[in-house]
Length: 165
Image 1: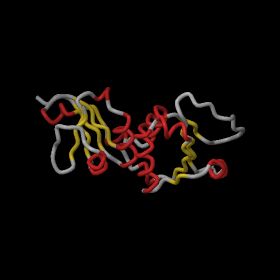
Image 2: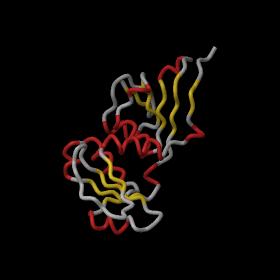
Image 3: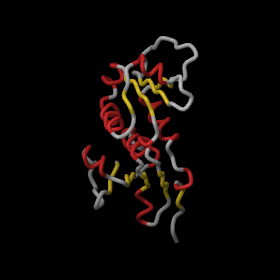
């Protein structure tokens, strides 16, 4: 179960509008964080924290930098859109705040520049044509969430929190 804080702590799952506004996402089990919560935290610079910490218990605090502030070009296949509607909505918001949705030919062109990050998001079992000498990162929804969670983690602001005495 995920809780959120924008102005107060909620005990119910947040609606999408609340999730966009929340700066802190509280989770009961840090090993069972939903993919959309991980993606939102990583893309929009949120904090995920074990709710036990608020009661003096042990837990984890994961802080993220705003991934949307980094230039990324993204192409999303129709299969990804059909199988990952929640992540697709989150990506639309990311593209409204800094990332750029592009057509496949532009993604290929943009991937040639050394500093550009080019993502091709595909359905889980969707086969793609091999791309010779391409720097395009091809991922399904699970791989994408793992990538943004690792790439935009603020290691120096994240920690295991010990139980307070």
